[in-house]
Structures are given as structure tokens and as C-alpha cells.
Amino acid sequence: MPRFARLAVIFVEIALLSALILATRCANYQDIFVAGNIYFVDADCYARMTRVQMCDAQPGLIVRHHAFENFPQGTTPHTTAPLDYLILGLSLLLKPFTAHALDLAGAFISPVLALLGGWFLWWWSHRMKFRYRWVLLILYAISPILVQGTELGRPDHQSLSILLVTIAICAEWSSRMKAADTAASEDNRWSIVSEPAWALAIWVTAYEPLVLFLIIITTTFLVNRRALFGRDRRAGSIFFAAIIVIALLIERRIPSLLILHPDPIFKNWARTIGELAHASPANPVWLRWCGYLLLVAPFLIWMNIRTRRDDAPPFDFAQGKLGRALPIYVLLIATYVLTIWQARWGYFFALLFALALPALLAPIKWPAAVWITFALSMFPIFRDWDERLWPNETQLAARVERRNESAQLRDLALHLRSRDVHPFLAPWWLSPSIAYWSGQPGVAGSSHESLNGIEDGARFFLSDDLQREREILQQTAAFKLYRAAD
Image (cartoon, rainbow, N blue to C red; front, top):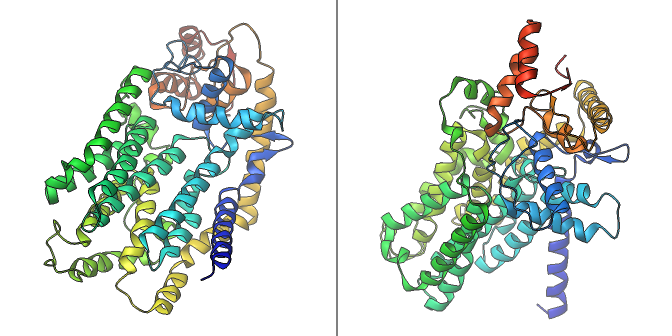
């Protein structure tokens, strides 16, 4: 193909992929841009943006304590600095064009990260020479769960975590696939990509990326320990250790493990959090995330294991090219089980399913059959998008009501602005937004570290005893009150 034609194809492919990613991520723009103001998706997003406000007011600040939630004790948060300064950096780029640079940066940071992830996957899948690479790219662009994690108005750590885990897994896979027929220096380059990406992802959140990293390291150790301790991985391991040490020196705290705590108050609160809910294997949401191809994925994995394209025996994973993809299948199965436990793992399950699909479909030699099957398998995803883009009257009325409530709450919070400290008591899901707009600390908060304040707020709003309500207000020193639960 002539060079000009090749460049034209590349331009068209990247443009189409970018348009699809941005269109799906920004489909909720009517809920984010309301009456000239910018609103965020949930309470955690407002807590993140309050951190960014603090960094903007004092550049170089590392936020290790949240005084704006769980007042008066505050919290030691699990959130870390990388996303704070990514948002702040984007706001600096936007400042010449808008007076609301910080809010706009918070709104667009996740779609931008999703776009970077899409570009990386386009480049990586091209290098891997996947026959059905566009299956991966399309599913990455339109999967509702991946869109939810990286949508407009969601300045949450999940979007950055998804990007870094994507890079780490792809680099790890490339290193294994090329190990049999390339020089050690090539593998070393991939290791230098994968290990720092894992370290940065763990810095962003020492939960999902850490578990995924431990799973892939354990699988590699059991399958081929020489590959784990090879000379070609030393440079990457040094970078990994250096980044982890830097993260510990900067953050100076260990993340809380309360998410595993059996406390009954925590369990009651966790039942109200969608990401902590169980996802039953019979729940149709799996098909809405991944399509009907998910139903035949176990068969495709088995077919790939049995159908070897090299001289190694079918189950000899220490040799041959297929063994390099085994950790991806292990991660896919592990994230499926973890998603059944907690729905928050669904982001990574859908990502891994999309990454695995080109390899799973590779043994099928008829492209027309693959593409027809893939198109038909997308019907549950298309149905989900149909409901999002064209809601019924009840859903539309609920959306309009939420927008009006957000606008009213913002106006109310702006009246709290003061140089003096005026703590307030509000339901936990409203407290972060009030704190962000008013600059005042709330008794409750949206994180599990704020559980004491969440409990105080719940007892206050559910109590019929005026004396008990006064005691809670006195204990928390809150003398601004919002009966937003009424």
C-alpha cells in the first residue's frame, strides 16, 4: 500500500475510534452542564475536586488529611496525589479559554484518559497483528461499564487506574508473546513499560491494581519462574521498586483496609453503594457489559488451549506462544469471580474480556462469520445505549429532578461561604458537594474512612428524639443543618 494511502487509513481509523470514545463518554453531557454550571456524577467526584481545590490554592501540597469530611476528626484518605495533579495540570491548559478551568478539567479528565487508552490500544493491537483487533477497540469504546468508569463529569481514580492497568497488561502480554523469537533487549523494553505502569497504578489505588499484579506475578511464577526472574526484567523491577518507594515517601500513609471490615454499620452503608454490591452470575448486566460473546467465552478459552499453533504440547504453558496469553485468561477468570463479589471489579473484567477477544477469536478462520457473530452479540449493549439515549418518561423525569435538586443544592451551599468555619450536617451522599461549593467541612462524607460521621448523620436524620439530635449536633460542633433527606 502506498505511503499516502497508509497514512490516510491510519488517520481515518484514529478519527473514527476517537469519535466513538468521546461520543459514548460524553453522552451524559446534559446532566453535567446545567444552566451554565458544571456538576459531577457522584459524591466521590466532589471529594476529589475538593482535594484539587486545595492543591490549586497551595501548589505542591500533598493532601494526606481530609478536614472537609468526618468533621471534627477528619479522615486519612485512601485517595492519592497523581490524579489530583493530573486534573490540576489539565486546568492550567484550560485557563486561557475559560473562567471555570478547574471544574472543566474535572469534568473532562476521565474522557481524556479514556481517549489516551483507546489510542494506546489502537497502536498496541496493530503491533500485535491481531486479525480481529477492531473487536477489542469497539468493545472498549462502547462497553457501558467501561464508559461509566471514564465518563464525562467523573474525576475518579478509576479512569486513571483503567488506563495504567491497560498499559501494564498489554506490555506484559507483548513481552511474553515476543520472548520466544526476539532478543532480550526487546523484552527488556516491554518490561520497562509494564513494571512502572503497574507501580503507578498501585500508587493511584492500592486495591484492584495490586490484586491484579499479584495474580499475574503468581501465575507467571507457577508457569515459568525463570521468566519472572530473568535478566530482561531487572530494569523494569528496579523502576517498579523506585516508584513504590517514591509513592510511600510522598503519601506517607498506608491505605485503610476497612473495606474488608465486618462491622455491621459498614455493612449497612455498603449495601447502599452500587460498586460494593454483588453481581450475580445470572444478572443480565453481564451481557449489557460484554455482549452475548461472553456466553461462549469459556468454550473459546478451551479451544485456544487445545488448539496450539506451535510444537509445544497443548498444556505446556512454559513453552510456545500460547503460554504468554495464559495470565490474561487467568486474570479474566479471577476478575469474573471478584465482580460477583463486588461490582466495582466489573471495569477490569470488561477490559480484560475486550483484550482477550482477539486472541480468543483467532482460531476462527472466517472473518465474515466472526464479524456477523460479533455484531449480533452486541444487541444487549445496543439495548442499554438505547435506554440511555432515549429514556422513557419516568426516567427522563427522574433525570430532570436530579438536575433541579443539584442546582438548588448548589445555590444553598453558596450561601454558606465564609472565612469562618461553619460545619454542617447533611446526608453523606450530599456532604461532599456541599463542602466543595461552600468551602465548609461536613460531618459526613462519601468514603469508608468517614464511617463515624456517616453514622452520626444517619442517626440524626432517622431520629424522632429532639434531645438525641441536639447531642449529635453538640458532639460534632455542627451548627448548619440540611434536612435534605426529607
